[in-house]
Image: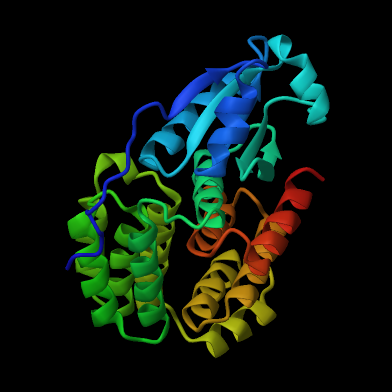
Length: 305
């Protein structure tokens, strides 16, 4: 399955350079008439700059000529820093057609930097490498959401044929097998993940979903466990089992509530099982899911009370 157009590979020479006030017009304003230019404003004394710079360079290099990068030392380019109102560093601006079109301040994780670079390229009318693969992942995710687990698995596998280290596709393939109730195969795929992506958020989420799917297979009846907890509120095992049963029944928010109550009553019970289970549920969901945000906030308030 050919998901990438290999024709017309862009020029990757001269992608990243050090700029000065004297070269800013040529390196940034004029160059950005044709191709977006990301400008990294930094200084030798800036600790976060030393982390951000290499991550930016890596993302720009990976874009294979779809964007360029210029590094500006603000100590040596104070006039430009003043004109662009650079108030703290690191600050990053993206220029296209001579104008700033996007930017951010402060250190960012690698995933955010990649998303920023992709966004800049797309805003300039280009297509980032991996853009077509990412579109294919999105299509496979839609298949999975609609219940077509087999079709989704085939698409994820085809994407991995083009990019074996595509974490989104790898995590998706695991989740497709979970959805098909083929937990052994899902676990085998997860265990065979390339080392480069084994700790990625996508695979961490797939691992958490696999653990929850295994638990669901042994979950007890919600009604009986609810009655047991109501009869004996300090029966921690019953409350923990109820949380597992609720989650298996799709009642995720109620499961989180029971685990938070268990943590409130005895945070050390069973080697902190309530907290561990909460983190498993949080990892299985999207980071911005309201259940995750509210659950983490409530858990933190208990921990630091």
